[in-house]
Length: 123
Image (cartoon, rainbow, N blue to C red; front, side, top):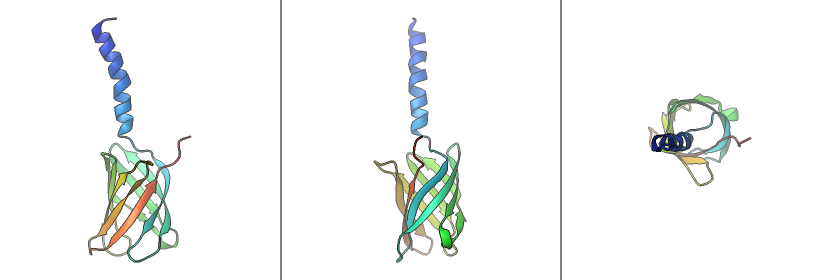
């Protein structure tokens, strides 16, 4: 085998791993939101992936469904904006050691909530 062939084989083994490290799984996610001064609310998320852009609908039971805008995934971080009937809210959720995305959601009125998103289990 020539060194060029070996290099191409190694590249073929390394690149898919790098690409999958920057991927996010579409599907039905679970999670929760803790709105300002309220109890935790169980939610589900319908997640669609378009490269590094995300389409997400948050289903919060009796609180309603919310379509996010500016959904984005990069560097193990999910970010998006949505309007839950009041101020516009911007969320930044970072992946933790358990592969759960968690972080803060800041309203344009200064309100702060926390959110976590749990991807579907591997089959």
